[in-house]
Length: 336
Ligand code: 5GP
Ligand code: MN
Image (cartoon, rainbow, N blue to C red; front, top):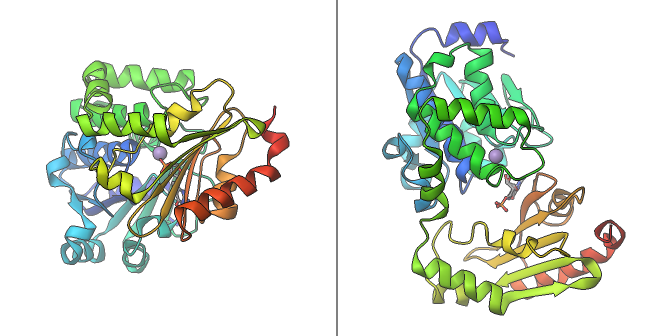
Protein backbone atom coordinates (compact mmCIF):
# COMPACT_ATOMS: atom_id res chain seq x y z
CA UNK A 1 0.00 0.00 0.00
CA UNK A 2 1.09 3.59 -0.70
CA UNK A 3 0.16 6.50 1.49
CA UNK A 4 -0.37 10.02 0.14
CA UNK A 5 3.09 11.19 1.27
CA UNK A 6 4.82 8.32 -0.58
CA UNK A 7 2.71 8.87 -3.70
CA UNK A 8 3.47 12.62 -3.60
CA UNK A 9 7.17 11.84 -3.27
CA UNK A 10 6.99 9.38 -6.14
CA UNK A 11 5.36 12.05 -8.32
CA UNK A 12 8.11 14.55 -7.45
CA UNK A 13 10.32 12.96 -10.12
CA UNK A 14 9.32 12.44 -13.78
CA UNK A 15 7.83 8.93 -13.99
CA UNK A 16 6.69 6.51 -16.65
CA UNK A 17 2.92 6.62 -16.18
CA UNK A 18 0.00 4.85 -17.82
CA UNK A 19 -3.54 6.14 -17.35
CA UNK A 20 -6.33 3.77 -18.23
CA UNK A 21 -10.08 3.65 -17.99
CA UNK A 22 -12.98 1.33 -18.69
CA UNK A 23 -13.94 -0.48 -21.89
CA UNK A 24 -16.05 1.63 -24.30
CA UNK A 25 -15.05 4.86 -22.54
CA UNK A 26 -17.72 7.48 -21.89
CA UNK A 27 -17.36 11.22 -21.23
CA UNK A 28 -16.23 10.72 -17.65
CA UNK A 29 -13.77 7.97 -18.58
CA UNK A 30 -12.05 10.12 -21.24
CA UNK A 31 -12.54 13.42 -19.39
CA UNK A 32 -10.99 12.16 -16.14
CA UNK A 33 -8.15 10.38 -18.00
CA UNK A 34 -7.24 13.33 -20.20
CA UNK A 35 -7.68 15.75 -17.30
CA UNK A 36 -5.12 13.81 -15.29
CA UNK A 37 -2.89 13.44 -18.38
CA UNK A 38 -2.85 17.20 -18.99
CA UNK A 39 -1.93 17.72 -15.33
CA UNK A 40 0.88 15.14 -15.31
CA UNK A 41 2.61 16.28 -18.51
CA UNK A 42 3.07 19.76 -16.99
CA UNK A 43 5.45 18.14 -14.51
CA UNK A 44 7.52 16.33 -17.10
CA UNK A 45 6.06 12.88 -16.53
CA UNK A 46 6.07 10.48 -19.45
CA UNK A 47 2.32 9.84 -19.35
CA UNK A 48 0.19 7.86 -21.81
CA UNK A 49 -3.56 7.34 -21.83
CA UNK A 50 -4.50 3.84 -23.01
CA UNK A 51 -8.19 3.26 -23.71
CA UNK A 52 -9.14 -0.46 -23.80
CA UNK A 53 -11.38 0.12 -26.86
CA UNK A 54 -12.44 2.88 -29.19
CA UNK A 55 -14.82 5.63 -28.13
CA UNK A 56 -17.29 7.96 -29.83
CA UNK A 57 -16.37 10.86 -32.10
CA UNK A 58 -18.17 13.31 -29.81
CA UNK A 59 -15.43 12.62 -27.25
CA UNK A 60 -12.53 12.89 -29.68
CA UNK A 61 -11.91 16.62 -29.41
CA UNK A 62 -10.56 16.91 -25.88
CA UNK A 63 -7.04 18.31 -25.40
CA UNK A 64 -4.54 15.44 -25.57
CA UNK A 65 -6.91 13.19 -27.55
CA UNK A 66 -4.39 12.84 -30.40
CA UNK A 67 -1.98 11.16 -27.95
CA UNK A 68 -4.46 8.50 -26.74
CA UNK A 69 -3.54 4.91 -27.55
CA UNK A 70 -6.37 2.48 -28.21
CA UNK A 71 -5.38 -0.93 -26.88
CA UNK A 72 -7.25 -3.00 -29.47
CA UNK A 73 -5.47 -1.11 -32.25
CA UNK A 74 -2.01 -1.09 -30.60
CA UNK A 75 -1.75 -4.17 -28.42
CA UNK A 76 2.05 -4.52 -28.58
CA UNK A 77 2.86 -0.91 -27.72
CA UNK A 78 0.21 -0.91 -25.00
CA UNK A 79 1.61 -4.09 -23.43
CA UNK A 80 5.14 -2.61 -23.40
CA UNK A 81 3.98 0.67 -21.85
CA UNK A 82 1.99 -1.18 -19.17
CA UNK A 83 4.87 -3.53 -18.33
CA UNK A 84 7.39 -0.66 -18.15
CA UNK A 85 5.18 1.78 -16.22
CA UNK A 86 6.12 2.92 -12.74
CA UNK A 87 2.60 4.11 -11.92
CA UNK A 88 -0.71 3.06 -13.50
CA UNK A 89 -3.73 5.26 -12.82
CA UNK A 90 -7.01 3.37 -13.06
CA UNK A 91 -9.80 5.86 -13.59
CA UNK A 92 -13.58 5.41 -13.51
CA UNK A 93 -13.48 1.64 -12.91
CA UNK A 94 -12.62 -0.61 -10.01
CA UNK A 95 -12.60 -4.13 -11.36
CA UNK A 96 -9.92 -5.36 -13.78
CA UNK A 97 -12.57 -7.16 -15.87
CA UNK A 98 -13.78 -3.69 -16.96
CA UNK A 99 -10.62 -3.24 -19.06
CA UNK A 100 -10.90 -6.61 -20.85
CA UNK A 101 -7.58 -8.35 -21.70
CA UNK A 102 -5.71 -5.30 -20.47
CA UNK A 103 -6.74 -6.36 -16.95
CA UNK A 104 -4.22 -9.20 -16.98
CA UNK A 105 -1.42 -6.90 -18.17
CA UNK A 106 -2.22 -4.27 -15.55
CA UNK A 107 -2.49 -6.94 -12.84
CA UNK A 108 0.92 -8.36 -13.78
CA UNK A 109 2.70 -5.01 -14.13
CA UNK A 110 5.07 -4.15 -11.26
CA UNK A 111 3.80 -0.53 -11.38
CA UNK A 112 2.05 1.05 -8.42
CA UNK A 113 -1.67 1.13 -9.15
CA UNK A 114 -3.67 4.20 -8.22
CA UNK A 115 -7.47 3.86 -8.35
CA UNK A 116 -9.56 7.00 -8.73
CA UNK A 117 -13.17 5.90 -8.92
CA UNK A 118 -16.77 6.32 -7.81
CA UNK A 119 -18.28 2.86 -8.42
CA UNK A 120 -19.46 0.47 -5.71
CA UNK A 121 -17.47 -2.51 -4.42
CA UNK A 122 -13.87 -1.94 -5.54
CA UNK A 123 -11.69 -4.96 -6.23
CA UNK A 124 -8.44 -5.14 -4.30
CA UNK A 125 -5.80 -4.60 -7.01
CA UNK A 126 -4.65 -1.07 -6.15
CA UNK A 127 -1.86 0.41 -4.02
CA UNK A 128 -3.47 3.81 -3.51
CA UNK A 129 -7.17 4.60 -3.61
CA UNK A 130 -9.05 7.86 -4.02
CA UNK A 131 -12.57 6.45 -4.04
CA UNK A 132 -15.92 7.95 -3.17
CA UNK A 133 -19.25 6.56 -4.32
CA UNK A 134 -20.89 9.91 -3.56
CA UNK A 135 -18.79 11.66 -6.19
CA UNK A 136 -20.83 12.37 -9.33
CA UNK A 137 -17.88 11.58 -11.61
CA UNK A 138 -14.35 10.20 -11.57
CA UNK A 139 -13.42 13.63 -12.98
CA UNK A 140 -14.62 15.21 -9.73
CA UNK A 141 -12.22 12.91 -7.86
CA UNK A 142 -9.35 13.75 -10.23
CA UNK A 143 -10.03 17.40 -9.35
CA UNK A 144 -9.91 16.73 -5.59
CA UNK A 145 -6.85 14.51 -6.06
CA UNK A 146 -4.95 17.33 -7.78
CA UNK A 147 -6.29 20.22 -5.70
CA UNK A 148 -6.79 18.81 -2.19
CA UNK A 149 -4.39 15.87 -2.09
CA UNK A 150 -1.49 17.03 -4.25
CA UNK A 151 -2.15 20.74 -3.51
CA UNK A 152 -1.64 21.78 -7.12
CA UNK A 153 -4.63 23.97 -7.86
CA UNK A 154 -2.39 26.25 -9.92
CA UNK A 155 -1.81 23.38 -12.36
CA UNK A 156 -5.52 23.19 -13.27
CA UNK A 157 -4.93 24.93 -16.60
CA UNK A 158 -7.41 25.35 -19.45
CA UNK A 159 -6.75 21.85 -20.86
CA UNK A 160 -7.12 20.10 -17.49
CA UNK A 161 -10.25 22.16 -16.74
CA UNK A 162 -11.84 21.42 -20.12
CA UNK A 163 -11.42 17.65 -19.71
CA UNK A 164 -12.56 17.53 -16.08
CA UNK A 165 -15.58 19.73 -16.80
CA UNK A 166 -16.55 17.33 -19.61
CA UNK A 167 -16.35 14.34 -17.27
CA UNK A 168 -18.44 16.02 -14.58
CA UNK A 169 -21.01 17.35 -17.04
CA UNK A 170 -21.55 14.02 -18.80
CA UNK A 171 -21.63 11.77 -15.72
CA UNK A 172 -23.99 14.08 -13.85
CA UNK A 173 -26.24 14.11 -16.95
CA UNK A 174 -25.66 17.86 -17.31
CA UNK A 175 -25.76 18.63 -13.57
CA UNK A 176 -29.10 16.87 -13.21
CA UNK A 177 -28.59 13.67 -11.21
CA UNK A 178 -29.13 13.61 -7.43
CA UNK A 179 -25.36 13.48 -6.79
CA UNK A 180 -24.92 16.97 -8.33
CA UNK A 181 -24.26 18.65 -4.99
CA UNK A 182 -23.34 22.27 -4.31
CA UNK A 183 -19.72 21.05 -4.09
CA UNK A 184 -20.00 19.76 -7.67
CA UNK A 185 -21.26 23.17 -8.79
CA UNK A 186 -18.38 24.86 -6.94
CA UNK A 187 -15.86 22.60 -8.67
CA UNK A 188 -17.54 23.28 -12.03
CA UNK A 189 -17.30 27.02 -11.30
CA UNK A 190 -13.58 26.65 -10.51
CA UNK A 191 -13.09 24.78 -13.78
CA UNK A 192 -14.85 27.55 -15.73
CA UNK A 193 -12.62 30.08 -13.97
CA UNK A 194 -9.62 27.99 -15.00
CA UNK A 195 -10.63 28.22 -18.66
CA UNK A 196 -13.27 25.54 -19.38
CA UNK A 197 -15.73 26.94 -21.93
CA UNK A 198 -18.90 25.36 -20.55
CA UNK A 199 -21.21 26.40 -23.35
CA UNK A 200 -18.83 25.18 -26.07
CA UNK A 201 -18.21 21.89 -24.25
CA UNK A 202 -21.96 21.29 -24.02
CA UNK A 203 -22.30 21.96 -27.73
CA UNK A 204 -19.40 19.64 -28.67
CA UNK A 205 -20.91 16.80 -26.62
CA UNK A 206 -24.65 17.19 -27.11
CA UNK A 207 -25.08 19.08 -30.36
CA UNK A 208 -22.75 17.13 -32.60
CA UNK A 209 -25.00 14.27 -33.74
CA UNK A 210 -24.92 12.96 -37.26
CA UNK A 211 -28.18 12.98 -39.24
CA UNK A 212 -28.21 9.17 -39.00
CA UNK A 213 -28.04 9.32 -35.24
CA UNK A 214 -31.07 11.59 -35.02
CA UNK A 215 -33.05 9.42 -37.44
CA UNK A 216 -32.03 6.36 -35.44
CA UNK A 217 -33.30 8.06 -32.27
CA UNK A 218 -36.60 8.75 -34.05
CA UNK A 219 -36.83 5.09 -35.01
CA UNK A 220 -36.12 3.96 -31.43
CA UNK A 221 -38.86 6.20 -30.02
CA UNK A 222 -41.44 5.57 -32.73
CA UNK A 223 -40.95 1.87 -33.31
CA UNK A 224 -38.92 0.21 -30.54
CA UNK A 225 -40.29 1.74 -27.34
CA UNK A 226 -42.46 -0.47 -25.19
CA UNK A 227 -44.13 0.74 -21.99
CA UNK A 228 -45.06 -1.68 -19.23
CA UNK A 229 -47.48 0.38 -17.09
CA UNK A 230 -47.81 -2.27 -14.37
CA UNK A 231 -44.07 -1.96 -13.69
CA UNK A 232 -43.62 1.76 -14.50
CA UNK A 233 -40.94 0.56 -16.87
CA UNK A 234 -40.00 1.39 -20.45
CA UNK A 235 -37.92 -0.78 -22.76
CA UNK A 236 -36.26 0.17 -26.02
CA UNK A 237 -34.99 -2.97 -27.76
CA UNK A 238 -32.91 -2.54 -30.90
CA UNK A 239 -31.86 -5.30 -33.28
CA UNK A 240 -28.62 -5.78 -35.19
CA UNK A 241 -30.62 -5.11 -38.36
CA UNK A 242 -31.63 -1.63 -37.10
CA UNK A 243 -28.03 -0.88 -36.15
CA UNK A 244 -26.94 -1.72 -39.70
CA UNK A 245 -29.87 0.12 -41.32
CA UNK A 246 -29.06 3.42 -39.59
CA UNK A 247 -25.29 2.91 -39.82
CA UNK A 248 -25.06 3.32 -36.04
CA UNK A 249 -21.54 4.03 -34.77
CA UNK A 250 -19.85 3.76 -31.38
CA UNK A 251 -21.57 6.20 -29.06
CA UNK A 252 -24.65 6.78 -31.22
CA UNK A 253 -26.77 4.78 -28.79
CA UNK A 254 -25.58 6.70 -25.74
CA UNK A 255 -28.25 8.70 -23.96
CA UNK A 256 -31.21 7.19 -25.84
CA UNK A 257 -32.28 5.38 -22.68
CA UNK A 258 -32.82 8.78 -21.01
CA UNK A 259 -35.63 9.59 -23.43
CA UNK A 260 -37.52 6.55 -22.17
CA UNK A 261 -36.90 7.65 -18.58
CA UNK A 262 -38.20 11.13 -19.37
CA UNK A 263 -41.80 9.83 -19.35
CA UNK A 264 -43.30 10.95 -16.04
CA UNK A 265 -44.71 7.55 -15.07
CA UNK A 266 -41.54 5.65 -15.96
CA UNK A 267 -39.35 4.77 -12.99
CA UNK A 268 -37.04 2.34 -14.79
CA UNK A 269 -35.87 2.45 -18.41
CA UNK A 270 -33.89 -0.14 -20.31
CA UNK A 271 -32.08 0.22 -23.61
CA UNK A 272 -31.33 -3.26 -24.90
CA UNK A 273 -29.23 -3.52 -28.04
CA UNK A 274 -28.05 -6.46 -30.09
CA UNK A 275 -24.33 -6.02 -30.74
CA UNK A 276 -22.21 -8.26 -32.97
CA UNK A 277 -20.95 -10.42 -30.09
CA UNK A 278 -23.57 -10.04 -27.35
CA UNK A 279 -26.63 -8.19 -26.17
CA UNK A 280 -25.85 -5.05 -24.14
CA UNK A 281 -28.21 -3.55 -21.58
CA UNK A 282 -28.22 0.04 -20.30
CA UNK A 283 -30.52 0.72 -17.37
CA UNK A 284 -31.52 4.05 -15.89
CA UNK A 285 -33.80 4.60 -12.90
CA UNK A 286 -35.31 7.37 -10.84
CA UNK A 287 -35.13 7.88 -7.07
CA UNK A 288 -34.15 4.89 -4.95
CA UNK A 289 -34.71 2.13 -7.50
CA UNK A 290 -31.50 0.03 -7.71
CA UNK A 291 -30.86 -0.46 -11.44
CA UNK A 292 -27.36 -1.76 -10.62
CA UNK A 293 -28.83 -4.64 -8.59
CA UNK A 294 -30.63 -6.04 -11.65
CA UNK A 295 -27.46 -5.69 -13.76
CA UNK A 296 -25.27 -7.36 -11.17
CA UNK A 297 -27.67 -10.17 -10.28
CA UNK A 298 -28.84 -11.09 -13.77
CA UNK A 299 -26.67 -9.53 -16.46
CA UNK A 300 -22.98 -9.85 -15.44
CA UNK A 301 -22.74 -6.12 -14.91
CA UNK A 302 -23.13 -3.35 -12.38
CA UNK A 303 -22.83 0.41 -12.09
CA UNK A 304 -24.59 3.01 -10.00
CA UNK A 305 -28.06 2.92 -8.45
CA UNK A 306 -29.56 5.16 -11.16
CA UNK A 307 -27.30 4.21 -14.09
CA UNK A 308 -26.08 0.70 -14.67
CA UNK A 309 -25.21 -1.71 -17.46
CA UNK A 310 -24.73 -5.34 -18.23
CA UNK A 311 -24.76 -7.97 -20.97
CA UNK A 312 -26.38 -11.19 -22.03
CA UNK A 313 -25.30 -14.03 -24.28
CA UNK A 314 -28.95 -14.85 -25.09
CA UNK A 315 -30.73 -13.56 -28.19
CA UNK A 316 -32.27 -10.10 -28.11
CA UNK A 317 -35.78 -11.57 -27.77
CA UNK A 318 -34.73 -13.93 -24.96
CA UNK A 319 -32.98 -11.06 -23.14
CA UNK A 320 -36.09 -8.87 -23.34
CA UNK A 321 -38.25 -11.76 -22.07
CA UNK A 322 -35.82 -12.41 -19.22
CA UNK A 323 -35.80 -8.72 -18.30
CA UNK A 324 -39.60 -8.62 -18.19
CA UNK A 325 -39.69 -11.71 -15.97
CA UNK A 326 -37.19 -10.11 -13.58
CA UNK A 327 -39.46 -7.05 -13.25
CA UNK A 328 -42.11 -9.04 -11.36
CA UNK A 329 -39.56 -9.46 -8.53
CA UNK A 330 -39.28 -5.66 -8.33
CA UNK A 331 -42.97 -4.80 -8.80
CA UNK A 332 -43.40 -3.26 -5.33
CA UNK A 333 -40.20 -1.21 -5.57
CA UNK A 334 -41.22 0.06 -9.01
CA UNK A 335 -44.66 1.16 -7.82
CA UNK A 336 -43.62 3.82 -5.35
P1 5GP B 1 -23.97 2.52 -19.70
O1 5GP B 1 -25.41 2.20 -19.61
O2 5GP B 1 -23.75 3.94 -20.05
O3 5GP B 1 -23.19 1.55 -20.51
O4 5GP B 1 -23.39 2.34 -18.22
C1 5GP B 1 -23.96 3.01 -17.12
C2 5GP B 1 -23.13 2.77 -15.89
O5 5GP B 1 -23.06 1.39 -15.61
C3 5GP B 1 -21.69 3.25 -16.02
O6 5GP B 1 -21.34 3.90 -14.81
C4 5GP B 1 -20.86 2.03 -16.19
O7 5GP B 1 -19.65 2.19 -15.53
C5 5GP B 1 -21.72 0.93 -15.57
N1 5GP B 1 -21.65 -0.29 -16.40
C6 5GP B 1 -22.05 -0.44 -17.68
N2 5GP B 1 -21.81 -1.69 -18.12
C7 5GP B 1 -21.24 -2.35 -17.08
C8 5GP B 1 -20.75 -3.68 -16.92
O8 5GP B 1 -20.80 -4.51 -17.82
N3 5GP B 1 -20.21 -3.98 -15.71
C9 5GP B 1 -20.16 -3.08 -14.67
N4 5GP B 1 -19.63 -3.45 -13.51
N5 5GP B 1 -20.61 -1.82 -14.81
C10 5GP B 1 -21.14 -1.45 -15.98
MN1 MN C 1 -17.92 7.82 -14.13
